[in-house]
Length: 70
Image (cartoon, rainbow, N blue to C red; front, side, top):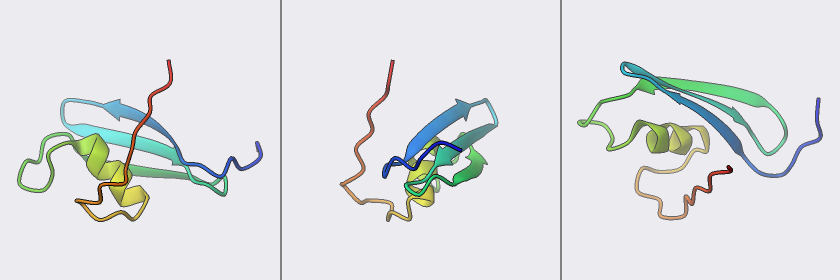
């Protein structure tokens, strides 16, 4: 297994019914989260909601900044 980076890394598959998020946490563990792609009563965006869940961030925490890699 590769060394821990000290940062989260995310891979996302957004489908018509479900959004799947695979993540590597700061200590190098792989974790997954699956949620409905469309659930406006609970969240605006499934990817952001899933990442917030994995990182244990509250729904309106403003400190979540996402950077995509090419």
